Image (cartoon, rainbow, N blue to C red; front, top):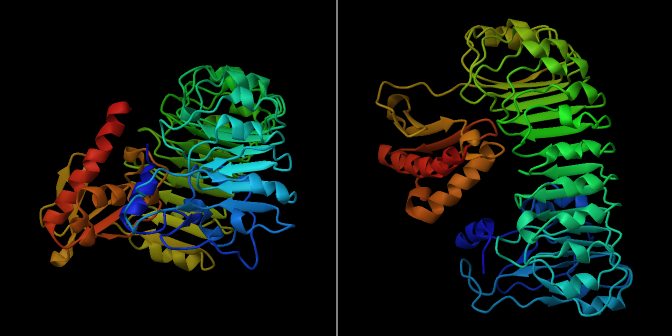
Length: 496
């Protein structure tokens, strides 16, 4: 059976695989003050790491009492820490929940099974484990919210036709959970839909879900057909397949938009999205922000823009309250276009500013937090003097000591002054195809643990979202780490 890489990582380190798992020998216990996991909690992610705050706070289904509204099916590891259970997973039978009509929601970190109807259940949030079998889904006729979690590729598939008769309003799944998305054309009441990955067919059936308010999709054909979804308020499109936003001009009610992919070259068409408040461009091909001049944005984030990216278009965005720029290896000439953004409360420019001039920021009196990378000389002290109420964080890159640094492919290793050690200090999120360098660190940590656990013990990780930081005393250790990182990057570069 396929195993999720996050589960492999945590099992291999003898640590909890997630907040909804029991460790070997641990018995389920009832919390004194139960908490409720909601669909919004699992919307962004298909794994249970983000649910850490709910550890020990959800009622195990075995300990349900009258009046409970939500129960959890906790996952379990059957052997010693780091070992997988020798026996195949036995699905948890939920038929006894028929005696607790108050239970409306089930959260599962293990495979479930149901052989009698449970019409009271309105919500099923599968965090881990295989998707329910057909009979189980058929016995949940009144589901309004369904999340199919993180089951690995090759696991059981769900026939979406079984869900069509349900009053579903919220649905999330990975594309490999289904053979086709064609039945979605009949889901007229659906309001929130997230599909991770892709089946490489056309997304056109989703255009019939005209009640959608939230939509998150990956790489699909036919995205231009989605312009008919005029009720959308929030949209995320990964690896966009269109060159500009003109096909989506019908999204006039949109408030939040996230776009990734170098195929997107222009923001033309965004001027029709007059209610847009939040925009996030991740590794997009857009180098001109000029079309944003007709939109009253409050928050803008741009990560890993293309070479030639210009800040000039920002000068017209006087409504901005938050601006985050993660420039990767592409510098900007100056911060001068930011001088008139008087409403800014948060500003982060994580990348090289060629003129090293902080003067344009001195008049931003509403600024409450500022993050920069670089050496700005005497201007840093003046900035702190002029903006005493602002939390200012300036990361100074390590300076080479004269000892030889070296590169392994795209990974640069630098010697620290006075033989203090060696470091990888760089923005590699874009190279690894992940959202930020905390995610990059997790992936690298996992890879090193699998390939060289002894090496892992000799390294220190201290990354921030904007920069990956790996430190070690020995040159050989950083060379070995850089080789592993370079191998992780190679497939990402090959597919771009």
